[in-house]
Image 1 (cartoon, rainbow, N blue to C red):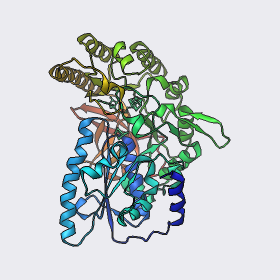
Image 2: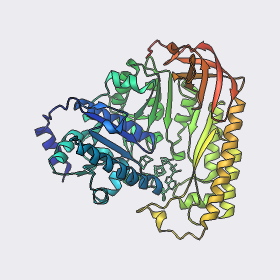
Image 3: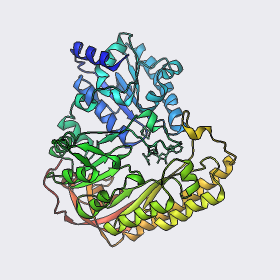
Image 4: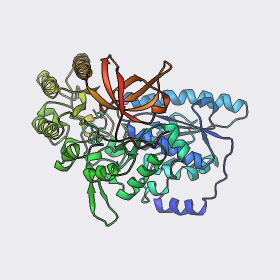
Length: 476
Ligand code: SAH
Ligand code: SF4
Ligand code: F3S
């Protein structure tokens, strides 16, 4: 159906009966974009009268927000759906209806195939159509259209309801804000350009307003997210182009913004202005997640990454010159088709040269419809397994060494919850590590200067030295 037709019908049929006493359960898989989208779908459901529940058994509406990035991620959904089908049958026996929705990237990629494989699914909705959920749900309940995987003409962000202050508070002092969606890079292994569509940036004022609303309800840390967030090019109120550095500066100027982050970045969009932002914007965390995928130029070319290992190392050097305490992390793919021992050795060498704070490594998973899925691959599965283990061990050693290097240093920690022991609180360091400290619950939502006294395998322990000067009093 052409998008305009559905938009018009949305306007015609927008008087949807509220659903008092009904509950929604949203489960998110995959990346931060999905976490954000799940929250926005919960907001849409809330505007329809659904209360959010963490107990799937209590939910009248169940939304699975899915990820298609690797085969295992994608197949996991069908296992989940099998369990949900049983739950739906059980609830039906006691006279309670359950509406089952599949959203996200598997929904976009597989569409109606999902309903063929699992007929208990009532609705399949792609990432660009979440604002249409109320109308789509009503149609699905009436047995009408059950699939919407269009890339509509209208801007979904203009149609999504704002998060309520109560929902913002319940989600804690650190929030995601999508500023850019989609990807035009077409790395040869990746489904994202197909599941999320072309790159689109939200206008500056829309983003700044959203951040201001979050901060007014106690959020102190905002992570600007996008599949290719550093390709952000939005417009300001005068129609001028604004890049990510400009957006970060505008966000940092808002009173109450204690810390800013952004993810995920592509090396080819690491502009001079963004690197300078790490020097100039105090609120910007000294942390850069910059995936390279492989240290071999031959494999980088086959991946269509359009940069060399040397280009990447130059960016790292420039970022370190701009902000000497900046820490790096990356994603790696091991076992890309035809990866030789020498190619893999180049990846290990690059990891040693950069010295990462943390890193994520995945075994290559051929994805339907991507160019790399067509490539011959003579490399043994067992070889790939050994390579993955070796890379993971190196990254783990670097992660531990990085933690140890922080002992004795003072870090800015944003506390976001109580610890297991009474009197203990937990927060995040600038480098995303969990930090435990003794402190009252009144510190939750505040940024504190913490002296690190111990580095464990999975967290740091510290002593609160002072409440940060950037703290503004917008507490939870
Ligand atoms: N836009 C981000 C990546 C998003 S996907 C970027 O460019 O870095 C997150 C990570 O999943 C990627 O960085 C990559 O390491 C991994 N990944 C993507 N497709 C994959 C595949 N087919 N097999 C294995 N890992 C994959
Ligand atoms: Fe996928 Fe590459 Fe786009 Fe990242 S930049 S989302 S890896 S196609
Ligand atoms: Fe997965 Fe889609 Fe994110 S494929 S990683 S949920 S963009």
